[in-house]
Image (cartoon, rainbow, N blue to C red):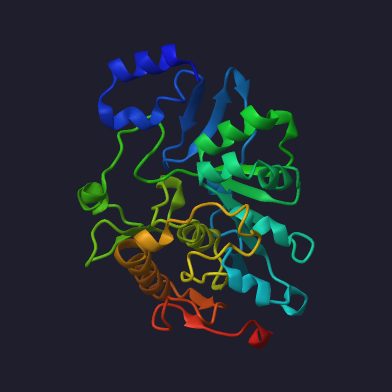
Length: 299
């Protein structure tokens, strides 16, 4: 992005708008009353996208979330019953063994470092990709919009919304306590779960937390999660080896953010009648958060 425009943006906006500096003035958006981004123009080009509202409660039944922990290598997906699958980050290495209907990529470093994986996802017309506006801009810059064959849904971090003031973790309660669809953790007020992703998705250090908010919004009632190990953080992800693995910072966030966030999610999802099963039987997340089950027992 132009350093000139970036400097103009910095000097004409307060610091808590800084997360938008690489987008202005190239990105133009419109929002619906619901809060979601409904149209996008990038460098004068209208970018085709699917509106979030069109997906609300559109689905039912079971769905599989494929995370990327090493335990994925111990699973035989040919024995898994048919159901929609939502992948995250490098899980696309499983394409062919399973077919993805949905995908979530919100880590900008992942896009930079694993652009070949991103190319596979955007080239698949059967996939609906959930990514941020920063993410789709990176994709367009890398490949051009004409190379995007998947459906694109623009999602936002609830604390870093486009052209809005950022929300610091300590301000989540003050900002969202009156939002009807937002559940804030009573013991950790920097942790929240949004049932209406049109107004943003709350981060908790891992893309799976985003995926849970998405599948709840889509309407699924039973969620299986594969590869949610949350231990052995020094080991490569299932699709990596020692030479090409990306850094992992989950261990630094596990105790104070990730574990309490998933605990909170388990409680709010139970209240909504949504069942979550963890297929990683040795996961660091306890049975009291998501029940651990063996994938062989799913029929």
